[in-house]
Length: 485
Image (tube, rainbow, N blue to C red; front, side, top):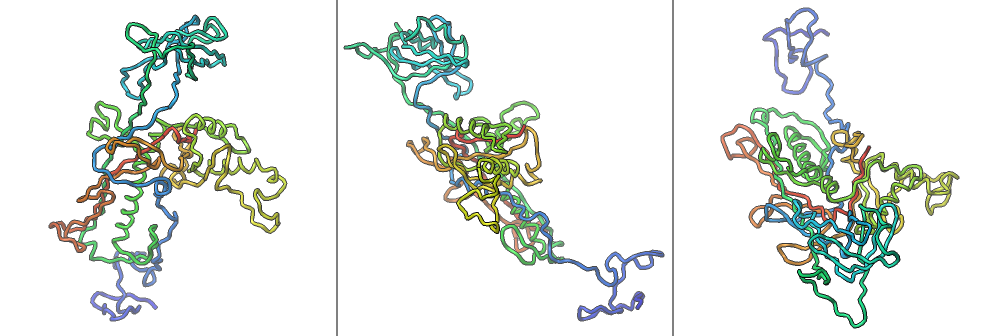
C-alpha cells in the first residue's frame, strides 16, 4: 500500500507498530524523486552488533610477560651495573719496538667512556691485533698518566709482529722473581703495583607523565544509542556513550606500554627541539638496546642458515651468557626461525614429524616451533603483536623496521644507591611514581557536572587518565635488537 500521510494526520502509537498513521516522512515535498533519509520501506535494517573486523586491537602485554612494576618516589631512578672482572683494553697503539699504549681518558665527556691504566709492573699480558697476530709479554714499566706500557715479549725481542693500531691486550697473570716483594707504585717511578678497586657504571632514567581524557557533553548523554559490543578487556553486552570511554581507556593502557618501549630522551638542545620546548623524554626499550645493547641488522635464519644466529650466540658468550632467553618477533622473523629449525630436521624432507610423535599420516603436522636449544642457550619464541599491527610497526621495511627483540629471562644483580647494597631485579621492569598518599601507576577520575559527576559547572563528563612511569633496562648488553636492512 502507498503511505503518504499529510501534515496533522500523524497519530503516535502506544506500541512499536508499523502503521500508516505513525509513519514519519522526512524531506516531504522536496521535489520529484526525493527519498526518505530516515526510513526506506518504513525503517532501515540495522545490525546492532558491532563487527570486530580487526579482532583484539590492544597491543599491551609484552611487559607483563617479561618484567615487573615497582613503585618509586623520586624524579629519577639511578642504578649501577658491575663492570667486567678482568683487565682488558682495546684500540691500543704499538710503536713496534717495546711500547704498547693504552688509550687513557680519565676526564671524558661521557662518564661511561672513562679509561684508566691499571696494569702493574710484573703483569703478564696477551696482545692481539685484527690480522690474527698474537704476542705474550711481561710488563716491565707502566706509566699510569699516559697509559704507556713497556713490555718484554717472551718469544721475540720487540712488538714488531703486531699492527701499529687496533691492538687488544688483556692481563692473564703475573711473574716475579724468587724472594721478591710486590713493588709499590710511586709518582717518582713506574716500577710499581696498581691496586684495582671495583668500579660500577651508573645509568639513570626519568619517568614521564602520560595523560589522556575522554569528554562527552550532557546533551549527547541524554540521547541513548545502544550497541552490542565485545570489548578487548573481556566484557560484552550493550553500551551507549561509554563505549567510547572504554576504548579511550584501552588506548591509554596501550600507551602505558608503548611509551616506555618507544621512548627517547631529549638529547639535542636548540631551537625546535623537544628539550628547548621543556620536554625531557625517557629512554625506552629500543633506545636502550641501541645505546647499550646489541643490534643485529638483516637477520636471515631461514632455510637452515645458522650463520647469522650462531654469530649472535658468539656475541652473547662475550656478554653475560644468560642461559634462558625470550624471542619476541614479528611474523616474518618468526617464520624465519621456523624454517631454520625445520631445515635442521633430517626427517622434514622425508615427510616425518619433527619431534617425538608417532608418524601417523592422520596426525596434524605442526610446522611451528615455540622453543629450541642451541649451544648452551634456551630460547622461547613468541609473536609480538606490536610489531605486526598495521597501525604501529606492522608492515614496515628497511632500516626503520624492528623485526624482533631477544630479552634475557631471570634477574640481574645491581647496586642500589638508596639501600647501599646489591639487589636483584628483573632485567626489564617499570618504575612508577607512588607514595602512601598518591599512587600514579594508573589514575582515573571523573570531572564535570554530567554522568553523576558534580565537580564543576561544565555541562559534560570528563574521564581523566594519568600515569607517571619509566622503564629500567638493566644489563642491556644481554639484549639483542633485530632490525631490517
